[in-house]
Image 1 (cartoon, one colour):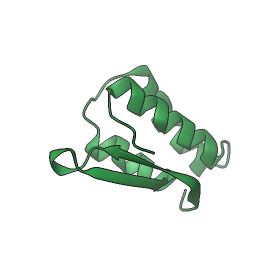
Image 2: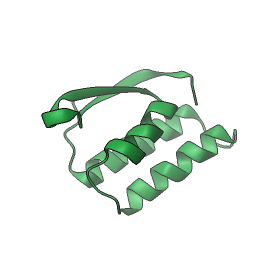
Image 3: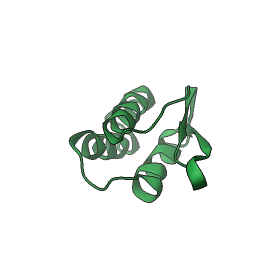
Length: 81
């Protein structure tokens, strides 16, 4: 979970909509738990499960990155990169 993603994801979830760059599964997991604007959603739940599966060695970091992006889209968060 500590391995850096080859393609970080930048989105507007910081204070006052500031850009935040997520570059690892660990960072994605924390963002989903601490900074997410919604508490419910199928893609959010899946992203959290995928992050846990990465930690267990059952999924890849790229799987987590894709699930994180899907959760951002579901929450209506603007993805910048």
